[in-house]
Image (spheres, helix red, strand yellow):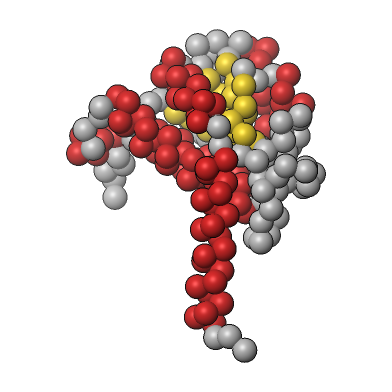
Length: 190
């Protein structure tokens, strides 16, 4: 019988292996397009639900630290979205009612929309400019999805957060931002 320490180390290795395989499977061209869309937008909005929303809120905050005007749908100070803005929709299945409804509304306003998800054939497909696909296990169990030892869609939510941090680092490098200078955007009422 293995000890808790051995089980912990084994589980960590499994989770990190899944994350490594997942991030390596994301199409870099789609991430570059997302970067370009962020640069073009006046403001960047994020929408998702549940744990995906929590991961997107972290990405939203990190991009704000880079001087990008960001908001998540539903925040109390959320401004109007316009046709000069970008909506990033996080939904593994691409079928969650709230993100899909918000995407439809943003589409009628003329905002550009990018879907970060796993299911390439969702209803989101008709609304988005393109998709950044994280091909991990969804509730649909598609054939080409990366399987996970973790419960439900944990791997997707973790990947959204890490992909956001990878994107932030790449934006810093592309814009040649001074890391020390980024603190001007960090909250200071702490």
